[in-house]
Image (cartoon, rainbow, N blue to C red; front, side):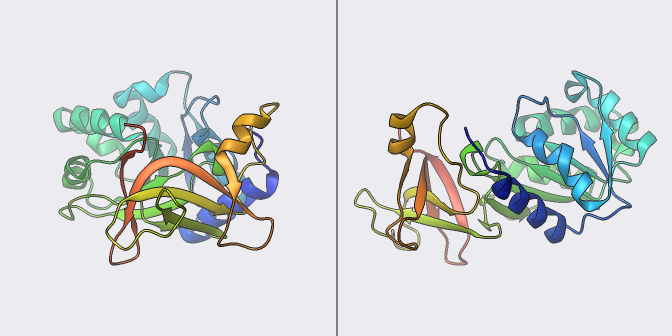
Length: 243
């Protein structure tokens, strides 16, 4: 996937300003570099003047190690795929040292999978002081394009609202906007769209299509994700269109 510097910079600048990343922050880098989440773990600290805390290879699978590292280095910001968040929470429910390791953490981000409401509730029961944020997005749109602060007891966790300079279209099969509450396919538009797939013009043409709702010549990315827009304007993930 050919992603531009402009796309990544938009993503990083949005996150820095939205979550107030400052020089006092310590951001945990634990995602293997072959996964797109690692991009912001590496570069967000640098654009915000913060510090990067590098976990050892494979350390992302070890709750006791991560908790000790967070405590020893003063980590304030971390990311978990929801399934790993659930595993980390389960380990912490049985181990006070793991629970204590996150006392200095201020914010945790989740992405890569749907975030279950039960995982939010269990996490908040152990660490009520930590903000938990649900992010969504494909590599084809610079990692993340929506955000939502997850609160315990709120039920289904939406993927939320768009990041800076990004538009979300919920469309039917004829590319008409789906009414509020009606499922449709999610299309993305804006500066974070990739140029396409390297040396795969056919695949690029099938996924990056003309945007009838944007400026002349603009494109949108067909995600293949089934969503619906809620009455409050946020977007809720329902599944895949090919399921």
